[in-house]
Length: 238
Image 1 (spheres, helix red, strand yellow):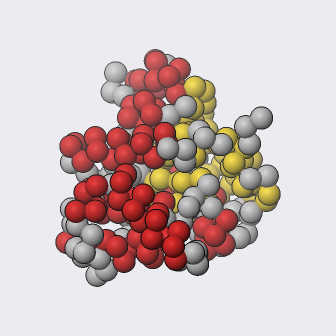
Image 2 (image 1 turned 90 degrees about the horizontal axis):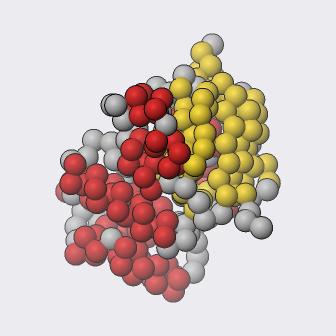
């Protein structure tokens, strides 16, 4: 039986008196790519921040690999294998690509394994290998997004959370980023993808959840959501 890697039940998050997330429930099973889609301001990023210990949870539960993790910090969760690539990338701009990758392995102590994983990551991201000694801050936004994803893989994630990876990128780089996400998934990584580009996100996903105004309003197989008239009208411009 496939293991449930991430299970969120009745999640509520508030900023001051405003409830940003209103009882959201979803799950991600081992080997899946699950997309959480919705318009800007729907509560997708807040949900991810709450799941990963960055944002306090007002109510509800979060389980990672069958164990409750509510109240644990992002550092502890990354060590356990719940790793997020935040919106806005957050690369170490004054470090080289290789140094950024080494920083991604900060929760590990196996030097040989880290060196081997850098080579594996370079196989997925050949563009980064070409520029291994270049400072991250001198790269394009798309290249920095690749670096942020590569750095997250260095932590050996059991579940990789991607927050708006295509935001602000050129159409060519968006194509490349989604190719890489597909490749990472096919290599066996379980992924929760939060993305405004609904058509691209659902095209890659096994299942999807639609968020509106802090609530999950629809869920189902990704192919089914892609063909749903409501989803097409709201998110695909049809």
